[in-house]
Image: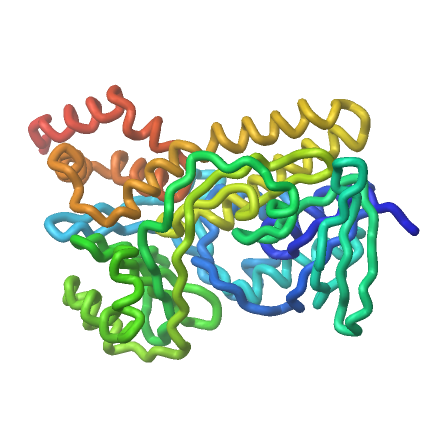
Length: 405
């Protein structure tokens, strides 16, 4: 029986890049997924500028652009009394994209195959095989139903929130918070976004819209988790009535045409220890937060790069497994913990406290500060940096300066 260097379970936006990066290093990689591609999955679709930078680094951005997915150059936030509008990116990576997952995931898995990974679509993993206290492979079946076992030096779980790899490993959970809100989205044709991501924040309701492939726009509506069960009885009614809290936007939506069903989701918030004897986790399998800041795809790309680097260090013999993977965990957590905390605060859908309202009022009209806030949401700037006392002081100081002619 062949022993692979790595088996990656899950071939979407965490698993395919991980497999691709390891295969590009010359390792033997088996990538499996129960889905076949192209296929859809619940997703916010948004790739913020850090994720776009990863696609460019991997040589995939031109292929995404060629699908006709429109660039998003502006993030606009409507808080009712005032609004903020800024650039989400940097000079090197100025825009975001919101591709359909039928487009993005197919592009990623094809590149993993081109890099040399062996691909098995329509393959259901039945179990993660354990030997001498460590993961040694998987057992599963394809469409024929015949169960087969495959061995590897490491099994990497990119299999999402309900990861079988994580369940088998019984890995440690930390920084846990239960679901805070429920979200439903659908697609609209004739809703022109003109290259903008638009977000609207009202008491106990928040929604956002951005363009995707084929000339349609995704509009996602969020309400508190306490209303999840009751609102399921009339999703469309609650969705449309909430839009009326921003009449101008509601008018634009009603002039458009809904072209798909409503899709809903609610997610827990957690970190999992992303490695152990013979196994690792990447993407949503290892860390997840509420989708309200749409960080999932960019996080998956970043995790894939960190995890592949650590696995390469170990497989190449340049570093022992434990310190290499511990560094992966440390760097992951250090990067995402500030936006994790910020996202959870935002996902509570509570009115901003008075000091935050004062800050937003000071940001309004200050283009540098508005760009800074947009870059927090896009993952370019850490909330810890933007909300640092010295930066807040600069924003308030600029707001109190007299206007010059």
